[in-house]
Image (cartoon, rainbow, N blue to C red):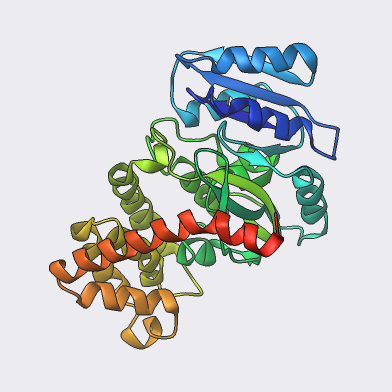
Length: 319
């Protein structure tokens, strides 16, 4: 197991503790401190002194892809899992994903669990819906990377031997690019999704890579251009539907309009059969002024929902 960590001193202890709490006790664990300028290394070093399974590797800052490659080189186990330094696993993550991989079709190279979303303070606010079962290249693209983030997967090491390392030159979409490469150049190209919620992910913390939407959309466009034409079961236009909706939601209308054109090539009838397709049609036909009002209303609703969840939970549980 590998944790790439950069300036996550506030949360890295929680991440490491979630690894040490795994019910499957047989593992090797490397934390790659990617040139942090806060106390990330100190927090890890303190835990490594108490548990020999924790190893700290410190390197100059090179980005998440380079840190993951260093972690791969520093480990030898036949299966690999990456836990971001601000996320945490549930205790059965490793045991359950190993069992799932053992019973999945033999061409499965990666399995992933479901994700709960938490705020910066660690409070869980929602559970994400994710596809389950078999995920091939077409579904990987049409569902816009159903694992959602790299912390949710367990991967055969052989996938990296065949597909190569992470592309350290990418400032964004590093995970998705790797999964697409495995899906197109590995002898075990499939993903398999399990229904168990075994990952708590911090959403959009200050300074996180995922919070830079402009960079993500730029590099996602390059991935879609390269891999969407390789889809065989589904129309390539379907790879653009969810990205376009996300771009509209975030106010990136220019890239969203471009992706909407690609998505519409799948046909209005095809788009109308799916909730995401209907959403794409609604966003793309609305004017910019209407979109701005929709985004404002949606933002208020989400804020109220997040604020109200703890109170609702207390009322339901009586605590």
